Amino acid sequence: MIFRKQALLVVDVQPSFAVPEGMIRDITALSRRLYTIATVERHDEAITPFERQLGWHPGADDDSLVPADRIFIKHGYLPPADAIDHLKSLGVDRVLVCGVQADTCCLAAGFMLFDAGLHPTLLKWLSIGSSLDRSADLGANLWRHHFGSVLYSADALRLDR
Image 1 (cartoon, rainbow, N blue to C red):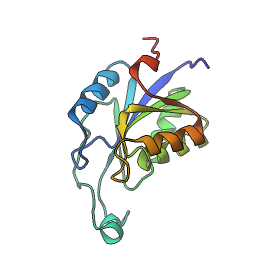
Image 2: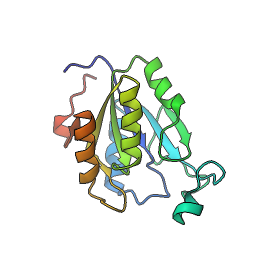
Image 3: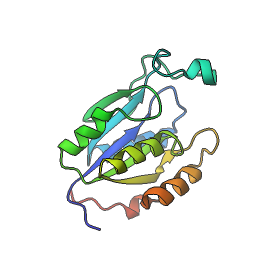
């Protein structure tokens, strides 16, 4: 399949999560080659009850650890609808997704992108899973099952620019 326009969605690469330095470096390098948006999970117990239900919460003032053209603040697992609307307004047809929690937050983004008519593609080598599976294998398997598109290395990534 040939894609007219691609963008990168970086999910929750922020201080509250233990993100490997090498992954941050490699996502940063890719963000310099593609239009990039990033989500940052911020805690607001009135919106998402992380503390009450899970006994944990992300920082209230975290920022993205990678540069992006646009940053979208989110509360909970889903990216904000305005992030998806922004990608659609750019005429993007494929969204490369990477970041934290391939089996939850990245997967939630994949469902929203898919439902919006975009083609979500997980960049597994630039993703980590939740504490259940840090390797991101579970997330990649779920992603492949639901959306069919997972790239496992930079060699598989084709960029026109």
